[in-house]
Structure formats: structure tokens, C-alpha cells
Figure 1 (cartoon, rainbow, N blue to C red):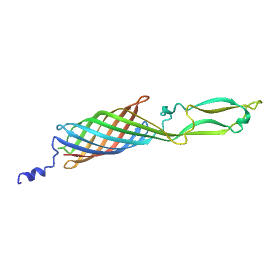
Figure 2 (figure 1 turned 30 degrees about the horizontal axis):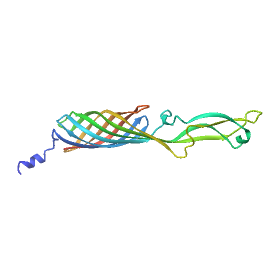
Figure 3 (figure 1 turned 120 degrees about the vertical axis):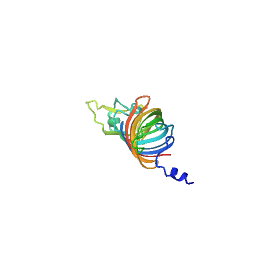
Figure 4 (figure 1 turned 60 degrees about the horizontal axis):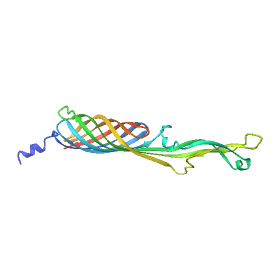
Length: 225
């Protein structure tokens, strides 16, 4: 007991053991996101560790070209008689509202730490891969104006929709692809194995029609044991 007490009070973090952490921050790139996540891992030695992590980013999508899954909505023209045209409408524009994008990733990463200042600072680099799911949603809004005949025969051109129809409710699309991550940061040890710090990373998810890229900056709380 006399020899165990000083060991228990030892403030240093052991070279091997476990690690858990949580993240809260924001992302930007292909959209703007609020990011939250958590991870756990095994420290194989003083420098190298293996982590698994679950991360979710939720936000908007302001990229006008980033909705190719709605590309089937297009404008076509046809001639109609004036009797029909009296109750008709022109659909000159199609726009998207309430766009959103949610990204969920499950990653396996190698983390290399470089403890300095007697183990008070833990700079690290991390990288790995896994799977990512991207879910996008948008509400299709069709702006209409009264139909106006354009010649003496009382016929007019109507602009309508092909292959899609009207969308009173939001429409959505999701896809799962390979996720790659690369980043780093630094933890500051506050007490025993408890630390806080900052995490900066780049994330890419490979999808069928376009890769999604985001950069993320997050505050991190960790505990090494």
C-alpha cells in the first residue's frame, strides 16, 4: 500500500493504453456544417495508436450545381389552343429551396502522437478511411405566370415539366461511398489523462457522380488511460 500510493498519484500518462475523445465544431467546403463526433482507440506505444470514430455533419447546400439527382426536371415547350391556354400557366423557372445535406462517416484511423513538454502537449497527425453516407434534400419550387397568346391564331407556348412532375414535399437522395480523412491537431493535458485541444481535418467521400470534400475545425476533449 505504501508503494502503491505514489504510483496512483503519478501524473504522467502511460505509454500504452486506451483513448476516448469527443469533437464539436464546424465544416465548410461543399456546404457549411455543424459537426459532432466521438471516437475510441488503442495506443499501441508512446507514439502510434489505432482509432475508430463516428462523425456526423449536418448543414446546408448552397451549390447550385450540386443537385444532379434532380437533373431529370427540365422545361419543354408545346403549342395549345387558346381555350386550353386560358386556364394554363407558364413555368419559366424551377428553383430549389430548403436545401440540406447530412454527412455521416464511420472511420478507422492511425494516429501518430508526439508528446512534448513532459507530456503536457500531445501534437498528433491522423489519417485513415472508412465509409460515408451523404444525404441531400431539397424542395422544388416552380414559379408560374399567366399564359399569354403570342400570335393571331390564339395559340401560345407552354413551358412544362418532363420526367418529374410537381414536388409539393421535399425530395431527397442518399448515397454511401468510400470515405478518406487526413488531419492533425494538438491536445493540452489538464489533469492526469484529461485534455482539451483542437482538431483540423480534410474529409473526402467518393460518390458516383461527384466527390464531396469538406474541411473541418473542431474543439476536442480527450482522455488517455
